[in-house]
Image (cartoon, rainbow, N blue to C red):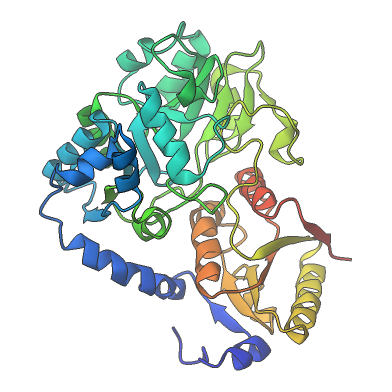
Length: 417
């Protein structure tokens, strides 16, 4: 941190602490130091009690899962630890859980074709059982084995965007248990681009059900230390591939409708998809408040991506937003609350109070998406009570970013006038 960052919290609140993306790296030190201790076992994962507990069939084994030792193994896409991947694959084949990096966020994986394995994902995350899981594959031939039909639109999209951050919803066959699909007759499938993820999928048998590797409702993990903070003691292994590239989850498109429908926006945008398959609709629930309907894809129904602090979005013209956030911050500080503020490179210097974090430049859409979840977790590490964020209605990925922010805020929006 810069010398200007004072250690006295009262002084921080009054003067305002500005934290850039690079400075925020230090905010996870406490968790990272704990990870280093676990990482000392990098030589390999012994398939002993930890593995048996992860695939537990008895009450005793289920009890052991709660006390399981979580090992973090570092590697790089250019230098994959094949022994570690094989051991993690073995855990998955035995019905256990393993966390791994993708190009979007870290995933919490289990054998997608085993009902009991999928149940363990819901238990570890505290995830509602009607919230579908995404099945990750490593080749098109594997897709043919779990769906009733592959429409031409799916083939075109796969050719254009796989491997990559696009999930397609298709009609499942009997090989995929309802525990994986949230009770639906459809299955969400994608082929990730991350080489560690692809290697693990191959080692595990070809089908990994994997939501984001975080406690349900929390910001998705973009670093292994985020996974460790939420999943320590619940899973035996985390494959640490460094910070994820995209930073938000995959785009999801439903291909079982007469007109394909985007259910979750991501870096594969509506325009990009329409350029490949033609007419596409967008689910109105992407930006609107959640309905009471059963979710057909992850992230549709429940509050997601939320920090521990209350989060509010402030919308309006830039000058009005800065003025309103400054007013709100002063009022909160008077009430004894610790305030976090999410601004941009263009506005951060104008905030005078609280912990101020720049998410990137307004024209840097990929940077904003990349930093979003990390900043929410960084503010948690500062133990703020309330967060005020600017809105980000940028041309290409703005919808994806706002979808996540609105759900994280529980649709709490303040209009700056």
